[in-house]
Image (cartoon, rainbow, N blue to C red):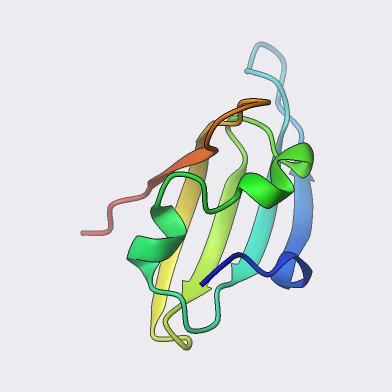
Length: 90
């Protein structure tokens, strides 16, 4: 399935403290029936690249609300696939 742009919501601007890297944004995305594997695949977020920055955090609810992941934007190129990394939960 493809990303549904209307399901991506900006939650906050995360302003850095003095000496920290640039500010980031926090997002929430409801992936509906898409699995976590689908959402973390390179290119899934390509259609919204204009809103995203490297280091942004996306909280994802996937697989009909059966799964939750915290993603960090790894690359947001002008051309090519947007990539994310998923936080490991212990």
